[in-house]
Length: 244
Image (tube, rainbow, N blue to C red; front, side):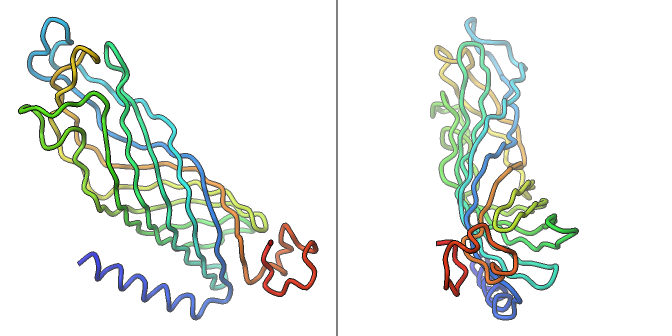
């Protein structure tokens, strides 16, 4: 089913680019924060561990993303598919030691946007995520754990993106919020108590929402001459309007 959806998406994108008034491609990169669930101790954690029912909230750390995009312009409307590598992290302040939570994914959003006024545009669209490994430091595989050590995230997920971007000639800034459409399952984790001060605990369900801030640069635009590109006039006789 997912392959059929992607096939339809690629067919629609091909049609958009065929009839586009302007088009181009570029690169983007930036920073992100990722929302995950609390960890709550359960059962007996022993004399050296905390009591049951103690709640440890995740502390958001800064991750990064990098990738590329194409765009097709239809007057004030545009279509912008992207392909990005996203790395995110958080940590939990356990009694004896911090435990880092890390994940990575390949992100394929398809954004539909509208130019509001001047350089400011808004957009929304679906995104397809292909996750790599997700890990929590200090988790060990025992008979008490649920599945493999660390979070058992689905490898392929779906989200909705909304955002706003500001563009100046070839350069732009993009603020985006990704809303995960599927909630994770609650999982029982068994931590190394001697190192972290926590033994058995539950990772509470959460939706993987991401807030990101990126900058982007149009490597090629068919309307580069009309916007007076950042490299305009440096390359005489450059009919493709590439910056290099």
